[in-house]
Image 1 (tube, rainbow, N blue to C red):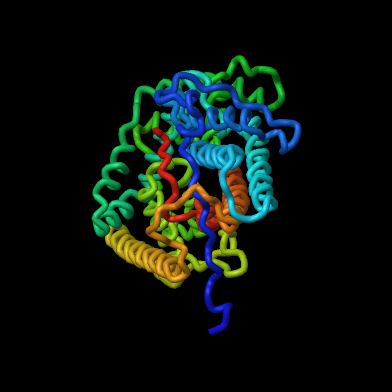
Image 2 (cartoon, rainbow, N blue to C red; image 1 turned 30 degrees about the horizontal axis):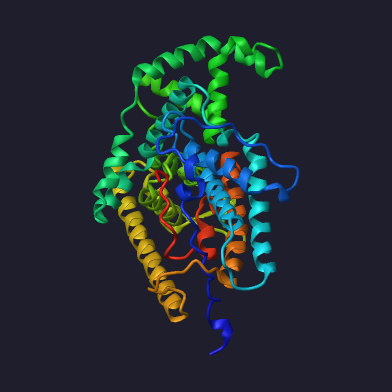
Length: 439
């Protein structure tokens, strides 16, 4: 059998110390304060033990702060930041290692470069900032809640059906839970937005009328922090406040009108919004929702093989064309029955994708065992040269994931950017140290 027939073995990333151990007395069981973001050093070699601890304290407390919470996309980014700081600090504190000094220094170099890139973004990127006031925190939570509810209004029925079939009742309850919106809150917000509208128009023309439209500016800043379009958000707020309902964007009317460009853009944008609106801890829900959206896209559109990310190249499938035709003429098809047909087709696609993913995980596991990558033996503190190489690979992979997060936050939406955990394929071991956010 040729060597090209099998994938190269993945290297195991060494097990690092927990955050509590790395910080010692500086670790806070209950977060009392979050220090300001540390300034980047003059050069990458400036990342030594003292300022690495400062960064780890900042990242850890930002993630566990209950009073001022990061947005979902900011939370995902800070998990990478914390991991990078912890891994380099663990290497700097010194271990027994096998292999030359060059491998160790190469691993440290990659982590320093990764952290330096993160530091640069943290200084000026809105989604990496914690809300400064309780009012800003409330506005962020309410905007996220409103966006989630609008999202589930489009896909809730299909999602619920898929969850029922997959026996994921808990996930259905989480979706239903987003339906509780504070009507009075948004009525007051909308009234104030209307009062500020004229002043905000002057600001957009370059006038210094910022003091006359503080709510418009607050919503714009919050949308920047959580990765939403401020104009779209104001539209959703107004519709909900006036009509007491979410824009229930049933996708069938788009098919009936033949608005296929709008349909594929909607699907593409919604797929890329998943990590912006679903909290990082809801991994099952995130996976199911991504699988649902992918199955829906593939049911209605053929993706261009050269540039599958570019939705403008997507072409309608035979199923979508037939559904469009069935809605035309003097005796159009009943939309409710069509919705059931679509839901059944999408749910079938979801189950197939999840089965394929499970088989792939099982295959990777068997290959790893055959190659001796997974062992039941307890690991020692000795760091093998291959593990130091895996450290370098992981640091490089986390740079790519960070760039993907920044693209999503800046609304440069690409489906390939939305798979935020791809760096784990570069060598994360099955026995990664348990280091929950709470500990």
